[in-house]
Image (cartoon, rainbow over all chains, first blue to last red; front, side, top):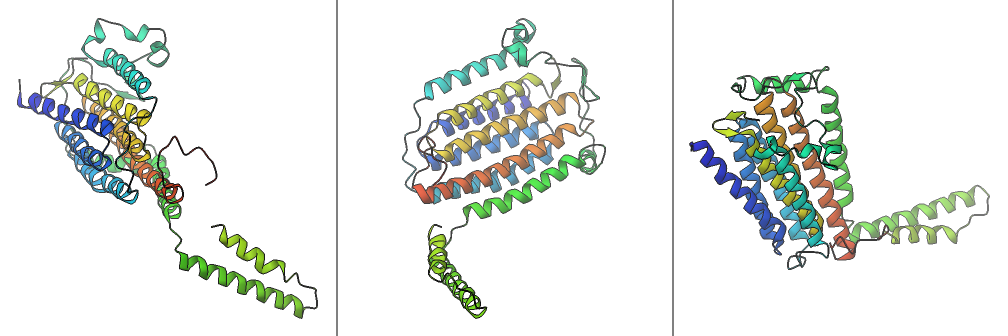
Amino acid sequence: MTIHQVLFIVIALAILGAAIFVVTTSNLFRAALMMILTFFGVAGLFVLLDIGLFAVAQVLIYIGAISILVIFAVMLTRGMQGMVPRNSQAVAAAVVAGIIFFVLLLLFGPLRTTIDVARWPIVSLFARNVSPRDVGGVEWIPPGQPIPAVPETYIADFGRALVDLNQYLLPFLLIAFLVDVVLAGAIFIARQRRPAEVIEDRQRQAEEAAEEAEAMRRAGMTPDVAALPEGAVASTAEH
Amino acid sequence: MQNVLNGIPLWWYLVVSAALFCIGLYGTLARKNAIALLMGVELMLNAANINLLAFWRYLAPASSGGLAFAAFVLVIAAAEAAVGLALIISVYRVTRSIDPEKLDQMKL
């Protein structure tokens, strides 16, 4: 056994153990901490794959941002921690997940050459051609051939591919737009209107309504004075 | 599929990623708390990322496709977490509960 294999097995066991803890514990805060351990393990796998860029991105984005966001949400919804961990469909969910894992294991695991799962009735609809020779014009390295090292300039190549019109410029722009919209949307959804703000709003609307009525009176029309402030107050009260 | 890197065949990564995906799927289907449900989704997205990067490293390290799509998954995961948690917090403020089974009305 090489050192890489030992490392891989240790990391894989840590990932799966922590992930099982995340989905079974009734303490949400501990689940969030174990989720961080899972993310660290995945970063370790990326290191084993010689992709330092993504190991760092994993630590920065998943552990630094998403986990902290989740922990904040756990703390903001206090009183929900000591919950029942499972709903009524838990057994069915476990069976479905188990079946999917079994099929994936047969499709991609060591037995794939002896048992041809891809010909099974339902599986064949999804796995018609599991290992095509080339996908999207990229020639795959055939089995048994040595795998070359990651190119030294892979980060620069990756950056250029993201802004290359013939490669990933359009998805990159779409993703950037999506993040923009999502950040604005998240702020809008989670924004809490403070009572003082609501009262201020109501007063301003009532004043505006009174001014409008005044203007209409000056113009010589019969204003609908009674309805205006009422309606203004009612519409703000619904918030 | 006998592509081996540092003594590790590709299918090891695929099996770990499949297991992580199925654990996340179970978490998404079986939890009684909206935040725990989002955690399950994060686990599934992580499994997808392991798959994308392992296939890239073993089969096509010269191209940038695997990296680009893994980066997109990363961004989508962050966006999903931000909006999901904002929704959960705003729902909690109104109903004082984040049990997805109880959230069955369109208007709060």
